[in-house]
Length: 403
Image (cartoon, rainbow, N blue to C red; front, side, top):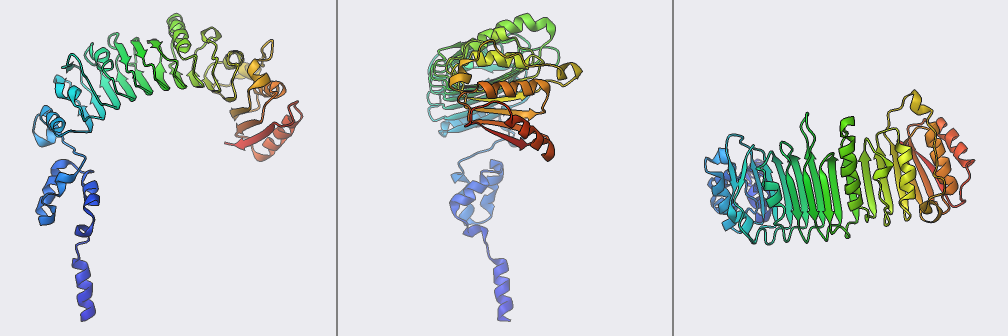
């Protein structure tokens, strides 16, 4: 009988009430705030529990109160992180002036999916202490991109993405303390983006540009740039001339980088500047002139130490007969700096073999050549033995890894 009573007591035990207040508040932060408030009916201990939750979630449709009410209330309550999601193509939305003047705001996420965005920008003193800014939009008001991103005196990390190509927008990114910038502007199915993007960021260290096509990128004060990732979109033949101008100017603006990832479809060697400080290069090309561009890249990166190669060209009969045409003179990087080479998706094609053989023979300080391949074990063994016959420095290790 006593044992039964003890089991019953255990069943009725309130384990949730025994949890630490900090943990309970953390759990409540994952549910809508209105639901967190309703927990006050559970017991006296829960009466003010929700007031200690540091993350609040309000839904305009759910709460039946104007969205500007919640935003202004959050600002008055010294908000630190603010996420505003607005999607209503039939309504105009004005970002409250108080958001731009908020001194406690450190992180701001704006997701503005509507046709018209109206902004009440104060004349000065915008975002005084904001460190992180992420803006996603679709067809914003024409002046919004130019105004919004040029008032960021303290922002260190910025992300800009969305659809912005119905008209030619001007993106003016002026942020003296910005260290990391990512931009991904997509086009519609019938039109590529053709925007003007001005980047004035003297302390920028990391730049990521995705789906670049015909936008004009003008980089000023980019001497602090350490790494860049540039992904160009596929374009039509009629757009080659415009693309060449944009690509040449963009690459010239990032020529000081130490680490570069470059992905492109159509590309000409004439676009390439001299990358005087480049140490690591990851080129991903999708056209047949991949190996021609590679030869030029090696010649224009005298301090290159590490390169990762991956040929995404479609293999056909004509391509299978393509051969490697090495530079007239061995690039400086091969003679004095290049230490590691990685080739992904190695298939043993004629041009790949020619490239690998050339790099091994000219890589005077080469330490490692790694080839990722889909070969079966016996095929990899035979290929490995063939590579051992190639001339190379004794310190260089050749390694095959199955993908």
